[in-house]
Length: 388
Ligand SMILES: Cc1ncc(COP(=O)(O)O)c(C=O)c1O
Image 1: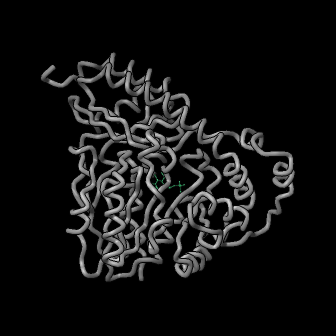
Image 2: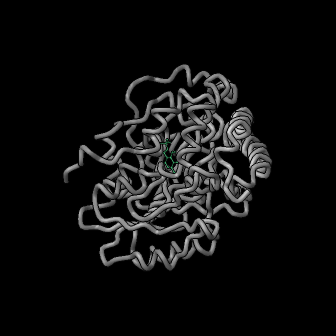
């Protein structure tokens, strides 16, 4: 099977390559606040710190360090270490899973809007259909739309909740129906759960797919809720250990194994997870209050709704000139980085063209919001909707 050298640019990553490290205010990050190596090590006990210093810098197990897999398995209700395969970040997990689970001639169904890898990677392999999160109905996913998208050759459904970029989490009833559909049609269910544990209302937290469906694959990572993307440690958990073994063999052609220091540090973070998550949830809550205030003050220009979970939301820009122009001017003139709707363009169906992604996980958000406030104040006449 040929892999096209001209695979569609990963538009979000290309935009970040241009702006992420030059924009003064990164107001669209999808991860929780990170920390220094020293801060993380300060959460370790003496033994762990010593073990970190003693880390052997050779190759490690492709599957992932056994102790780490054990700690990861403990974050699921029903799994053990044999049911976890580690990857270099979540991204390598998405890539591997799509390459192994799908073949030409298959059909996959993916929620839209999405983190682009979720659709571009399967599209390189087979036919793909989108099912919409409805912007006009609180990003609701209609399970009937999944049923309608199915074909005799549908092999996989790919979901991501809390969703990037909308922050949507479906109800438990919808989630259960998704599992039922997959079971009825014998589908693989690939569930990107990287924003799990950052639900604003814990009651909305969904179970992990690997715990409740025998052909389910739960993707997770240290990057988002834990705020440690620099470790590049992700994993897929599943009860289908034969398939995990195939993922493991595929990884031999990719990163081969994860870096041993990152595995050690991930273990430290998982042991300190309640502390790290509490810190990150506090930042998230405070940022959302600031965003509520900001958008209340600019109700003529934006439609704002809090995400159900995760570190990003996808509000509407109602001003003159459109969201692409607004985001471009904002970053060029005020150094504030947002992601305009076009970054979330889908090849599967039309996506909203008046939205932008704003982040809410990082410390220092207030300075970015102040710069945005000042930019709008100076240029209000350029953006004010005609009706106001
Ligand atoms: C939904 C989703 N899945 C996967 C990833 C990739 O995560 P990582 O950077 O840890 O590889 C991201 C990163 O933004 C994401 O938003």
